[in-house]
Image 1: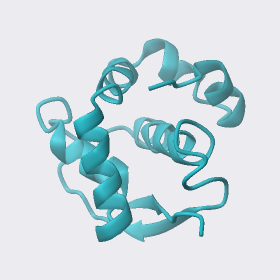
Image 2 (image 1 turned 180 degrees about the horizontal axis):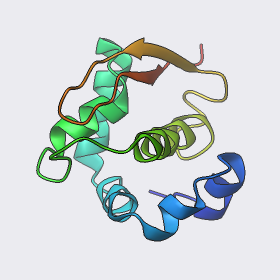
Image 3 (image 1 turned 90 degrees about the horizontal axis):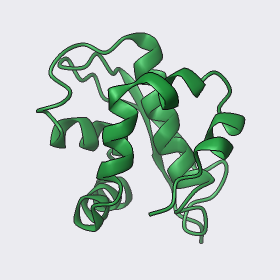
Length: 120
């Protein structure tokens, strides 16, 4: 799966540190290559209206073992926002498809996250 890091950093200003320094970004890039995982994340998004970031951190409970810093939560959410709205899945979802919901994940501290609505 293609993830244009430069376009991501231009689209979501303030995320360059995440793409250059964070272990979470490296793992995210590796994990989105897993077609089965991405299929499950899209299923959770499309049918359960569960934000992909929430399903992802639950799946990768081995990596996300504690509370994330606010900027880490925002940047990881931006990764999924980019992927669904401007990246690989733009034809299915596109810009302005994000819907924010409460998730209240105590393990990571993620409170609100977005799922994405499909185009008609």
